[in-house]
Image (cartoon, rainbow, N blue to C red; front, side):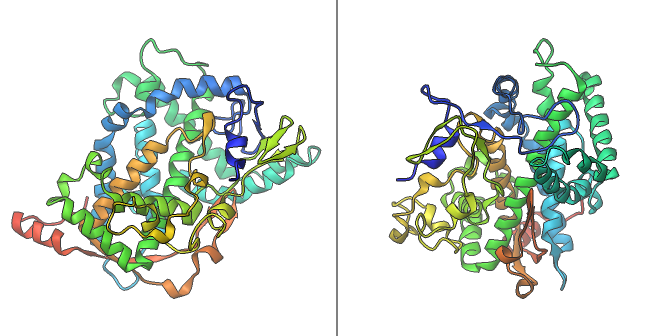
Length: 427
């Protein structure tokens, strides 16, 4: 069995030499943020400081925000989506992820869903990825790399200033914030901040913001698309959700974790779309990877997309098959997938540099998909205009092809509204 992933990303344990992070990533300012920090000691301090924010108690306290944002999105999909042209789901998934990241991170609503319009920070994020790709390439040419900053979009400077202002307001007025967010835990009175410096807080909180927007939007959009492309899989999900919950208001994450098909849909979407666009490069200390000695100084990384789409590891690797994740006791379990090598499935990586927010990502995905599946039926509008994998473009993160979906209020939602005498009201 191949051990490449564990050899690289679990290095540093049990006396093994450490595969240090490369300078992959970008920053403007003195601090890089937790995701890009190369120094092991600084990363360890930052992670220890941030870890409690993503504990189960804090996540549960943030449920009201999560449900409020999801409810706005689902209700607006029902109101706006039943048209011939449908909704641009890349935009909508970006809006959901961005609003969640802003409110959960800083108590700041960027208003994407409210205005049904892409906010300035999200516009910047969507447009800057090509520049980040150029920045990575020029890092291999040290003499020329400074020239890259001459092409730095002015919008990036404006957005970074705006984000800094948001963080400054959150720090200076910490006692006035009643809403629980990440900073509530980070800025507790008496809790030591590794470097009580506004630039330090901006760097790390912006890193969390980016990690909360891009991967989650990728996951949301791929799940909705793959289900629309596979109506039989979508029906299994709607049957599971509607059979479990008699009322929309009864949907809570604690119950969702017990639903096998919902979990399978999320895992299969993470595998087939492969959110992590890059292979998380590391610098070899002079050690063995998968039985091969890698000299010190060489850069190594896993080919995540290739691994997740290889017949060497998966049965029907290019098909959307949530059933591959079902336990053998499930009636929908298919033994054809029994030889899938799930040990190579690490969507949030492993080791002390794995994704610190993975539990929140799963929680958001469960709540969004469950509430959509209860209240809405949907179908793809422009399926003949694109090929998802063919049309993906990679500039630091994925640029996804636009797809549109049409939404209708489900029969169970109509019946519930009629029974309670309610009307769907725009939020």
